[in-house]
Image (cartoon, rainbow, N blue to C red):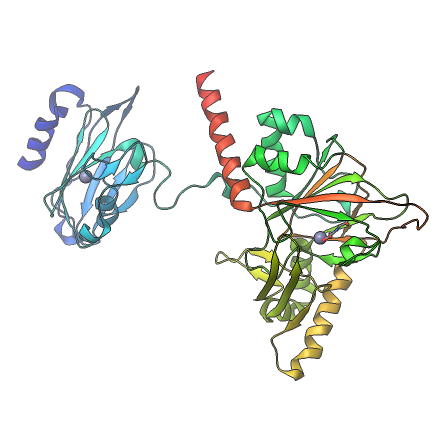
Length: 434
Ligand code: OGA
Ligand code: ZN
Ligand code: ZN
């Protein structure tokens, strides 16, 4: 008790901002090594009533801010995250405390609050830890609260036909709200169309620069999908292209793909899009064995050739992949390119029959959205979620030159998510300053 009163005197709480004070004496039975107190802290404009217990048995601080649930802050985390000038470099938001100097068995011996809303903790290593309450109640503990986790994925099927969210090129390029809307839709639906771009091979790069930068690959910073008279890839012919995601042979498969229509063919060349995450959900319920085979078989993808440089990519990955949180993370299919599967011979037929079922779902009318790009349109799609295909198109042998021309480019998801957060922070700042 005397110690707690001393603390209050030393912080000025007894005289200046004391409103409510309660002591729970020495709860040794429960391992509490300190007194808890509730006292009014003047932080910013609102009075605050933190109540703190140092729980020596569990080695954590129980902190209850007025009207909130008590949160547990382990001593080691607190010591590691001290906000004093010696431990933390505020401008760069980086720790100065070397990890090798951190005593992970550190104890907290005492806590008091100053009247500017700061918790001060005396640690067993002799250090005084400094924690603004705004930091302790903020987003950093127990996990970062990533605003992207609040975006709900919206699975879709053919009902999206004619309803793919559209944006104007000039808006996306100049208006932060339009760009934010486009980034939001890419995160939730995985597909968007940008209209009224120029019909020159300049626009994909402009979008990349607006968000961050394009993801360069062995096909260059951007790549041209066009009909050529001497094609070295079926991309350069008018044949149909089966459902696929781009460059499965890369472990770091490109995140989001843009296809900008510079010239459309006179006939055919329509794109088909499928939300594979929805198909996977259906498969899981209706064809669990197929789902299991596609999630557990290692497919061997290769991509070999010469374009921007000589390349030989290989990956060994399941067609359906889940993250550690149990949510679907990536679908990789590209059976037009060289592929095989890492299974014993007796497993080959079951794998083919699982793929057959998967493709039957992909081509089912209830799952497909069709869109024939017009010149000046850019289709943007999550390359880890959407499968895309192309119907064949007519190449007139009497006409010289390119008869259909799309320019493609990729932006990776880290960059898209990063800029979404940047725009969100800008919006919050603007709202607060208004
Ligand atoms: C590709 C592709 C789409 C199209 O070349 O990978 O998906 O419409 N092309 O030509
Ligand atoms: Zn410190
Ligand atoms: Zn493709």
